[in-house]
Image 1 (cartoon, rainbow, N blue to C red):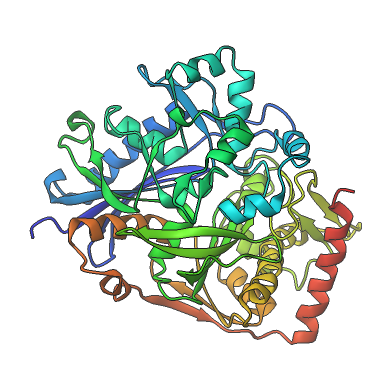
Image 2 (image 1 turned 120 degrees about the vertical axis):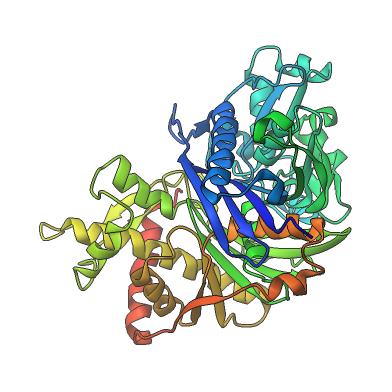
Length: 495
């Protein structure tokens, strides 16, 4: 086989990214561009879908150019994306009728509260594995249909299409020929029955969403369509697709029940492979589809944290306390502790295990001795504390302790943070050689469908460890720090 390379599109929350991998998992070339976010009201987060597509295309072209490869060297494209983010567009023109409502957006908090009188979380959880929360796509779709003039009438006439980011990019890349999503992204909409593998009629009725705007649902490995020839100079098949956290699970080779990974990007997301068992959480974690290959579903248990890397980005781009994300590590190491400072990054509410959309961020424990380094260190420590929140309840749901964690994402090159994470969790933390595991997972899925890999076991052989972090802090100290975090959290939870 001459085509040994894979092109991964990773459309995240803050960046568009394209990476070319060799089938061995080696990163050959990549190109990134920042993606704008807009905050028109308190708790609202929006993006421009046209910018997403334009920057995706630019990143693909630049990555290919940097690689020195010909397009004909690329076997297939894998696509991964920020999940839950909601886009509605015109079927014939492709024009979005409203900006993309981002997964972090909380504008439908009251709508969810009103619906809770008629829709029980138990019923929603039984069907979708999720909770009734603004995080997911369903209430965002309903909001657009209700607030954009004529949107409901146009949807009823079959003039509009809905998609999460994967669906929108696929539709654009194929020139409007394919309106589809994959099972992992579908499972994050609050409309998909993860047991029957179908759009759920009861939920569509409850949220007042017409089924004709929804995409078809495919496996994570499938023939999703061909790119328009003019985009890259040659039509390439799109053969793999998954939501970013599920793609990272693939990239981390967490293919066996009990394996768990945590990704530190804009937010932080921990996902436990539960095999063919859809484990129902007793602690407000989410049951989700980890991946579906050849019709066989593997489930996961997930904890979602809304702000991790986004906190550091806020310090850099809005408050200008640091010049680069890498500077945060140096500042954290320059002080022995935070001086009693805790940062609660609830900029758009709190995710698991609290699920409080009305909570807001807070900086606690300030004194006149507080320095910039203390605040930056507190922001990094918050990622570890939130991870411990998740690990504790995930272990309870799983019925056994979690003793090892694979980590990835943009925050993981920070050695200090990874060591603090191991100290706070009291378990081994392993960082892989390639921390771009989200894109790598998308590439692996495409390669599996293209025949570059014979099985998941074949992919598993490509995974390599870069560094292992082992706990070194005394448990009494880590417990005391975590107790301080819990006291701080109590102060921001809404009544």
